[in-house]
Length: 275
View (cartoon, helix red, strand yellow):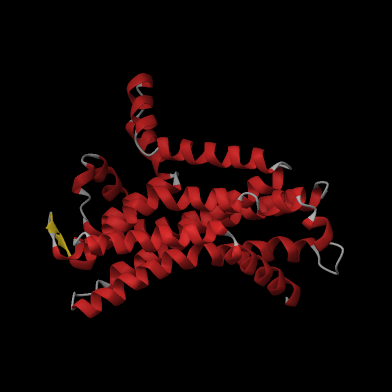
């Protein structure tokens, strides 16, 4: 376990020194600062005000930004080490492939998750100073949703990094996956339903296995339990399961998906040529 934590610590230090981490932190911290400067917490729209409205806006923007940041910064973790011959150097020490791989996973997860969580904590602290009521239940549920979403795309990124040898190819695949999942939030599914006349239940199922769409619906359900903004789709979701069960699945499914892809990536990594 000592070597595992050492690899995680080294990856964490390397990431913090990198320029992308500074940009990554400024993006999410800057979003919160921009919302405060714009007076989001002092306004009210559709019944949402204070920190509740700020968190709602923050989470909606995070849906788009967080996955692509995780993919493009993580997908080069192993392929980049292979290109720079760092992998060959690291494995010259008494470190197993398991310790190297999962140490990289742990270190990179801390790197990508902490700035997102820290930005939300800043919002809570600033809101408490201003005397705004703090929606603790929404905060903790958002923390869980962000944790699971980060896990899902981190696992996908390590899977990609394990199956390709070139960093450029890995970046290209990562960008394609992000565009594909983003398109299937609305645009592609609507086109598919109109052209192929598919059953609406099948369309909704395809949408719900997309971690980005599942995250979006779960985030909306925290503020709008009846999902009125989603129209007829809400009736199918709410008739199929309770709101509590849906939020639970919204946390467990992306987390399991991330662990699954990370595990498959490890199996491929230890069986392929390392250099």
